[in-house]
Image (cartoon, rainbow, N blue to C red; front, side):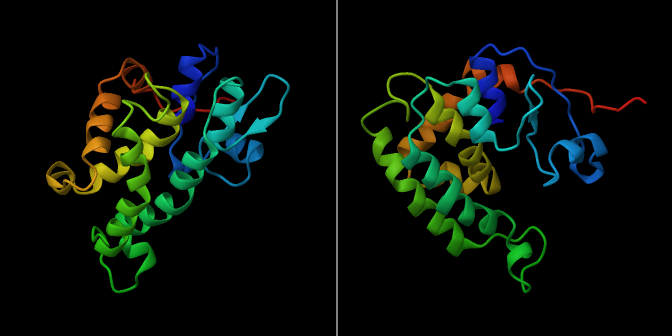
Length: 186
């Protein structure tokens, strides 16, 4: 999503191909053998298969703060995955269980962003920008794991308001359009 948001903001002309990850097209795997999304094939044939790299390509003059990216893509994402998908990381957990210790650690990783949002409406400053787009999809996932807890917690109130604002933004609405699953025709 963060790559799509950056491409939208940059007004990039590209062809969107929606895929089912459980049925990955060979053409996608040929372009990026790691088999994850997004995969962005540039006009020169080179491939970008990390969303942050696509953001940097689409918004080459943007100030994407490495400390925010490192926090989100590093410790926060680590704890988000273990909180959200506890059964993948703990053999005693059942599908659908959450890991509250990792939720607590994820909140700890978000605390610096929450503190920054106490003095600025966005992580990028006065307006929604690349740091927000880079962080927003993962914070959105985090909030969706236990929506009742997210709504009631007072640990990260500034981040809650920020997420609500991002969810109501034009750029989020624009990229949330549904696309049919791409079918390769021979």
